Length: 635
Image (cartoon, rainbow, N blue to C red; front, side):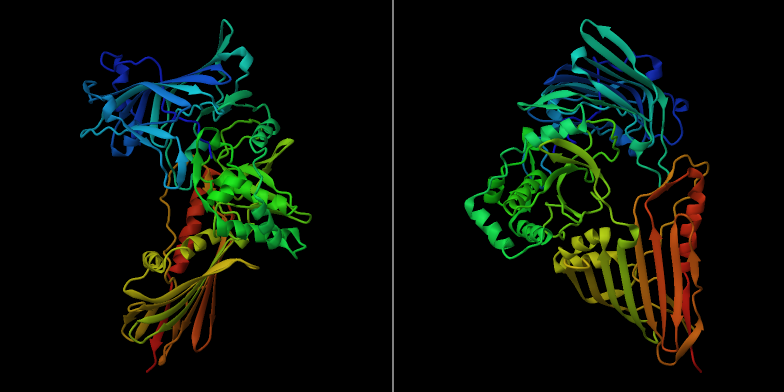
């Protein structure tokens, strides 16, 4: 879906400018570079000329000094384009540490290929790409290019600091447009109002940034885009591939999207008869919708379509019906067509899936955020949200990549902003039960059951759909044990009622317990890896961000081998700081020891000064789980 795709990489601009003979400040000395810097953007210029509602030009010029291998990505040239975005005047030069020209890249050396992503059946997206190969650091890459747009829905954004550990010496962003076009802007992590100028009937805005960064990537810190300065642009009116639209408000943007759907939900008489037969005898609309969703899953497969306005407009439902495939737009529109035959009202809903723009601003309508389409079903007593691209998701299930994200309900009257509901942490589960039969020689037979629910269902489904051989390979990679054999395993998927994926497995471990004299030392952290302890950070700057919500529980039942008795039990723990809740409980009798551990984590943010306390929480959990059950052989 093209709601995020803008047709170019913002690397950016101006008349080409040879590094040789430049001011010496452009040839950086080591003492001029801050610590923990992998690359330095010496100069970055981006100019946007919005000519009309259907055309604009972008000019880019950039000089980047690469200091080490980690910084090489900052010097990579990547340019997305299609038939509506025409690149020209591409020039790339590479200089050594002293500023001497060592290479002028020829046009034939720049790769140009279709952006086939493995699931797009139709796409006109292409990419020009060049990766400098220089054997010695530091080196400098300078490039410039222009892009001419024949229609647009989104305008470029300016994010002068592209990643962590990149320093910016000098960057500028200018926008020139006809005063009748009403270009809007929003400042993010940036309070510099633009320099404003007028020239004839045009208005000019300009921002400058100097000596910024590098931003250090601290453990559990928010994504880079939440910290760096940015300028977002949006247009009120636009024209793209013969279609005109209005982005004055979310309502007007939704109205434009709705206009692209008109007349595209007609189905053949044969399909209409099939729908009626499927829902015949069902009185509940939710049950009808579920049956039709499963019909969709059985009949259709997902492919991506990116062809001009096809990046926004779905294929006709009748074509999808005939072909048996479609992208998120087409499959959602097709499902709505099925529902319409059954007399059920559904709403075409654009939203954000992973890979989209996570930051969202209600007060800034723009084509910057959405990259996915789902269906909203407002029933009388509740609302269902339906993902139409999965052949395996149960009806009404939203994956973590969509749950909790902003969305725009699209109706003939316009658009309305909502939030896709998420699932509370207590319902996002991985429940593990391990029954351990320990032998006198330290070996053990293990019977394992893992149940995935809530948002963690996605992980279970991804395993369920693998071949048996792929599942086994994955388990061998995941289990944290030495010298073990999986004798059998199986996944089951319950789509109705209490939806879950369940793994059962039998495992033989030759050396689970450690033998010392007449004692057996048995770990209770079995098959899973310890929690990774993040590094200590002095003078932390960023927030502590926990990006997942879940409740996991492990039950480990250890049967005491004949002739042994308990000498020492693990200590019970109960930790409930503001970051989460961890409990370790021990239940025992003469024949077995049952160890129950649980961890509840809520998605949240905490001040930077809380980082060490959070780190201590993880250390305490690790300490608790390093304990062992000690059995002693009776005399």
